[in-house]
Length: 134
Ligand code: ZN
Image (cartoon, rainbow, N blue to C red; front, side):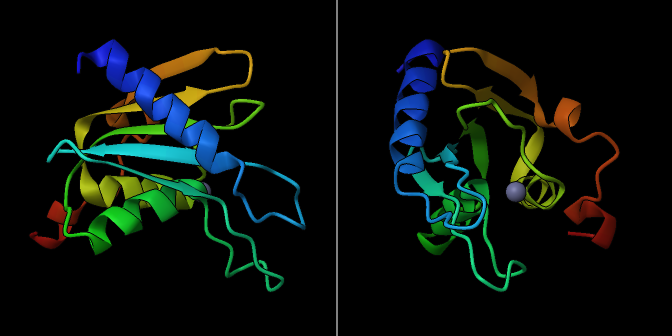
C-alpha cells in the first residue's frame, strides 16, 4: 500500500471504530487506527467510565492493543472525530512511548479534512524513553 492507500485504510478503520465508542457521559465518538512497523493495523474507540479517571481514549486503546499483540513501534496514528479533535496530552505521551519523532499523526473529521503532522510537531520537547536511558 502507498501512503494514500494507508491513510484511507486508517481513516476507514478509525471511523468504523468510532461507531463502537462507549461514551454515555460525553457522547463523544472517537476512533483511532494505527499502523505499526510490522505493517499491521490496530484500532480502538474511546471507552468512558463512570469514575471518569478510568476513561481510556481511542488512541490509547489502539496502541495498547498493538502492544498486547507484541508490537512495539507505531509509524502512523490516525484519530477521527466528527469535529477533528487532536489527541489529548495523556495520549500524546503514550504515542511518544511507542513512536519516533518522524511518526505521522493524522487528525480527521467528518467532512473529510485531515491535518497531517509528525509526532515532533504534535508534541515538541516531549518526555521520552531515552530520558530514562531506554
Ligand atoms: Zn487521549
